[in-house]
Image 1 (cartoon, rainbow, N blue to C red):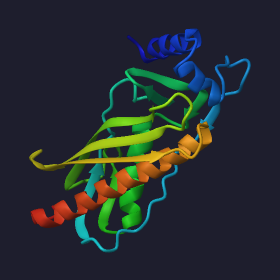
Image 2 (spheres, one colour; image 1 turned 45 degrees about the vertical axis):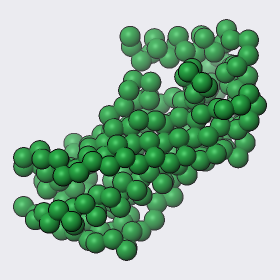
Image 3 (spheres, rainbow, N blue to C red; image 1 turned 90 degrees about the horizontal axis):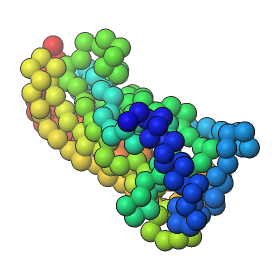
Image 4 (cartoon, rainbow, N blue to C red; image 1 turned 90 degrees about the vertical axis):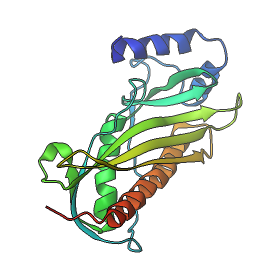
Length: 218
């Protein structure tokens, strides 16, 4: 099934629902057609800081685009209620979630100032090691009918040598942040907070693992 048809089915289900997730969607901007309400784009802007307490490395680091299931590999802002997954109406990210996270991972290492060079793997950097990630969760979880959701960001990271593809280590990072209100702007702020925690954990683990592995740059 295509991403477009999958999203259409999910939105149709939300419109037909008399309660449950339809109430959540209505409280977060309303279930409106594009002709009724313009699409609102949201930026993912986690606050990234320096990691000066970690060892520096002369290794060059390539960042792969995170793998994700189709329901998360989208521009839509995902929510979960029990066993049901849906998306906020008339709101979306400025790019697909994997593209945003790849760019933010690069930014996290650039901001750290602890690597010689870092770039997306598609840009042709002669990397010594590569960071591959898999996105396990990137959604707002509702545990009550009218309360604000808990945003969960979960990512598995794998560090590999470029020459031989040897896995140096595997790490899982997971953070959650409660939205201050049941509104899309507040929920986006919670995504920023949870994402910042995951990015910092992955960056710290990567720099520590490279140092402990005793790898030498090519």
